[in-house]
Image (tube, rainbow, N blue to C red; front, side):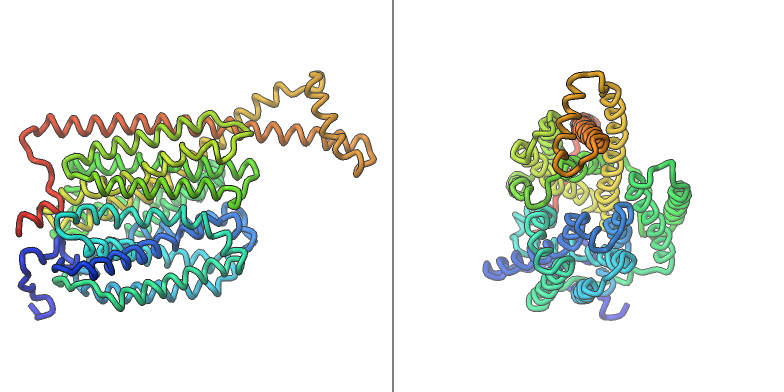
Length: 552
């Protein structure tokens, strides 16, 4: 074995927790503060790369001259590459070292952000988003590693929670200030800000480098075959989930063909890995009861969390409110997200992660049921509390979910890639599936309520006739033809019917989310009981903190 892959002689407290992760030497307090600051900068930078686009799809649609379904390709392209990137990124860190990993991907990120400035059509914008998805996966891991360096061993579990949670603050932050960036330089204002953040993060990591780690020769030729199959299959699945509700599932044949091909590609990747001697993805471990239950729990939580984007935000946009009028709501969402991270970090215990997940889902269910009584007079102020509860639950669950998986792979570090892929798939695909499910349900219910309301609209009804005359009277000074004025009055009634149908449909969505959250709560509670009574004598899964503390 060459010297570059020779293991180092680590002190017990310095030994990296996983292959490819940095060592953990003792740092003075000032250095720990520096690591924390850099961790926040890197995590926010990685999160904002997608959040700035997600929060401004409507504004970018006009700039790029695209239809709504075409704009759906932008977040879809990001997920296409982000969900499969960790298959190779984990082994890249293990074989080429953390410093190469850090510098290469941050330089690449800055170059991609610079390329944003030259985007002038939808095709190039999609290509840039796909490249950002690859680099964004690297930055989220990098921010977590920096945050771990900021905490002593006994508090390192809290570092995991904070490192994961900080990146979740990016979306509410983007919704708050991105409007001003658009006013500054239209869509280039967003990309200039993103480029500035990328350069700032690059400068930070070049000045303050992560401690070294051991290097291993881990890449095999078959890894790239698996990656190609898995990446292609997950990309096709992401495209179908993103575009299905816009083009409608049964109206576009290519959606069915793409879905079928994606399933075949994913099954082929799993089949190859199942029979490999040194698999990239340990399919047998992923099929264990604990991992299946954890993956399903994270998937269900991500589905119900789609209530914020598909539910509340879309509800207000349908009523004609824009980002400027929703700033107060976004501030409460940001506050709830921050509180969720803080409370989770303060209360996290490896033996109580199931209870944390149940608390998070209970908050989400409460917020969804509160929103289910909305009407056309509802304004953001009436949803401050409910959205605070939802955002609190969204960040409160992430750390405990990750800790549950980490505890199970401490004794089997080779399963790290498998867990990262499972967690990333559940997070990303859960979000897309939730948006597709809730968005499609809203469309179906809107059509149902519109038909029900339209049946009761008749000009023989004095109230309907008075409403039509009031609507046509508004055009008395601009439209001289009485027939045209009546047509405008009927159109106003039709718009009112559509608006009320949408309001009722969104209420149905909120009810659906609430009951899905209740089902998720029951599922997690049943899982906790199953683990408690099936192996009562088994100690709880150790955390990285416990494992490292036991060696000192």
